[in-house]
Length: 178
Image 1 (tube, rainbow, N blue to C red):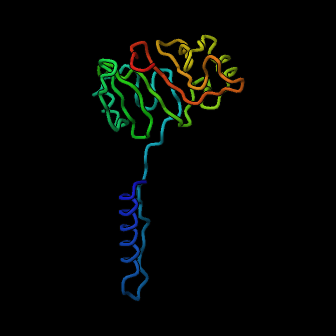
Image 2 (image 1 turned 180 degrees about the horizontal axis):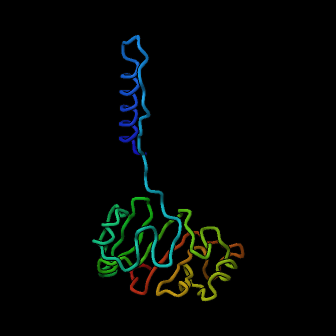
Image 3 (image 1 turned 60 degrees about the vertical axis):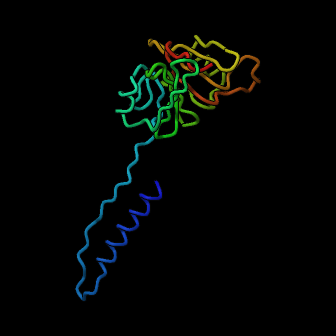
């Protein structure tokens, strides 16, 4: 909860309790005070085509309309590419204004097949027989969809006890990261 919201909540509660104990010999009638500090929880399921309300292929305007995007930054490196950050702290890439990659970072996210941070290469390979081991990270096709999962921490020449350190979901229009 942000500091401003916390200060407002304590001020509201202080006013309620001060009013309830004002100078009176008669018992004060009290009613419950509903204070809502509901913040949408971070999504946990990555895939098959999105994360939370965000979907691969959305335009920038559609992505902003979900309420999940905190900021966009056009990097134009390579041309047309940009980055975005979600309110819950995760991020991704855009290509010509289209969401092309979603990276939940170190959030407790997992694929529908149960793969997440901490999964071993054997677990990933069992869930995704199409796993392709890369130089910096590995990838696999999302079953029955035109998207791919990326698995950081699993790569060529990895240690025997290598595990997934981050997940990514991307489509074929993602040309904005290595």
